[in-house]
Length: 307
Image (tube, rainbow, N blue to C red; front, side):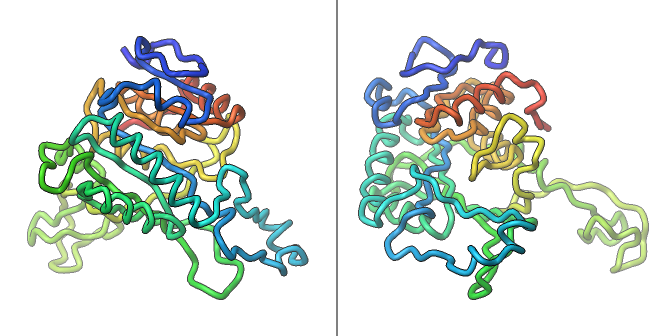
């Protein structure tokens, strides 16, 4: 079983192993992975928040002790997240081309992003004639406020769910419709059959107080808090995603024993959830510290939240 397999950090891909946690540059690893070896890709690539063209410093932040000290605000300033706009597009196209090769035809390609990069990724997927089946909006109800006070508070991230095939040929991709319904359980009035919010004790439409639970199709707006501190007990990553987010994607877009590749694994959330759900993974990251965090999380039986 996937859960009990021994996991170690390696330098390169080994197709004889069920799970690969690889600490290396993804472009050095890609060439050793055969065509069509993975069933799906789920990944959270660099957003280029740290270094896009014409990026400006938040000058007054240096003198504003309320945000820098009391609120512990830190900008994302990571070397792996700094590109010029042109270099970022080239970088994204290169890794996507490798994913098109490595993932089987009609496998899912699921990519996280923010407004900084998601439109670029969508453009490149469309230019490659890959079928986009969904966009998911992640509403982070406890998102950090916008400290510049010159724009709306950015409290969402985005996910593009695409299929590794052309629009004309795409078919039979994995989408576990019924399994995803468990994430959208609602209250239904037993008398008037209206769906109501969970906090109501009496139906606002007819006054009835007897309800049934009902599972509805999952919508593409996901109200999930930012990553809880308990999932960061082995160390912090500046863009770590919550387990609940990856559960929905892996439950909905993969099957047991499927192989999921994540070329930008970070602290390993995709690998952790894949392991707990009896999927296999190829998790790659070039940062040794993040790979150690991922390894410790994979060994930690408490890093589970499987429904």
